[in-house]
Image (cartoon, rainbow, N blue to C red; front, side, top):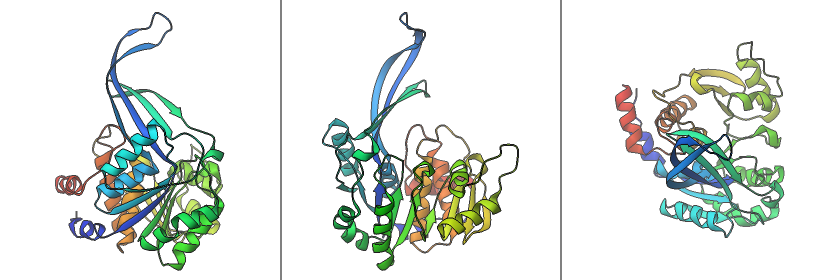
Length: 325
């Protein structure tokens, strides 16, 4: 497999803006050896707590980890979770542009027992608490958009991204000649057109295309890609297919399927964020879609071999490629 060292050098020169639903990921690690006498549930003896950036903030973390400069725009409240999240982003040299809002910082708490997720506890406000106007977006983000090489919309369906915001920022980016990508959550039914890249997973691709999934039939790749292009006019589509790899499409035509690079899978949390970050970085350097997909596939292969929401460094990626060869 070709070395990614030249690509990583180009990535180190990039500046990326991520806009979306930022959150704090909290992990409670422990063991369970008995059942509670109060209810038929395990009693977890907690050994430690860890925190990391989640959602759009994890996309930013992956971008920074691979060597690019990154700014993230999302709602961070003045609460304990917000202060922890801000500190994590500062430690990773990520600039933050806190957006207007009235809710709590989104917090996802996962309880892990012997490296298996027992349950997840979510704290978040209604979507209306995180939304802000297109005029506010233009005022806050216009200069950063123009100074960036690529803009990434990271939608976790929490409310910050709206049709008006996406349209407004995309117009600014287009006039400035910037690369624009979106990781969509179809249940939001956001309107978008003429982007450079979208990265749905298999289930999301059906929803975005308006095609009903049939578990008894082969994946209708040609039909899905043609419909996505008809509806959204996106230049490149990369559909993550889990263990089946990545499906690549350009201008509505299926171009290739890249088999998965993962050797061992411990945890898929955040793997989509890694794929998105890697694809955007590679394409923003001018790489072809197939090379960008191989790069993203390798980066995701490293991340799923780790526990919890994770990132990949250039050294880890180069070592991984060396062992794959």
